Amino acid sequence: MINSNKFEGAIRSAGCTQHMLAKEMGISDNTFSNKKKKGTFTIEQVLWLCTRLDIAGAEDRCDIFLPMKFQ
Image (cartoon, rainbow, N blue to C red):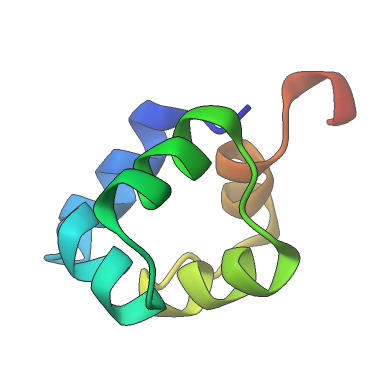
């Protein structure tokens, strides 16, 4: 499960919207929303999102994309 609050904060901080990211990733808004809700982004997508949203620190990446049971 993704930490939605932190993820949405990172999206806003980067001056993006979910629609913009979905379009850049080549997926629909609904697919992006479902991936966010279910935490099913691929590793490649997570790495791309971290680069695109300037989420540089390992701790920040883990806080957003890793469920608490894995931290």
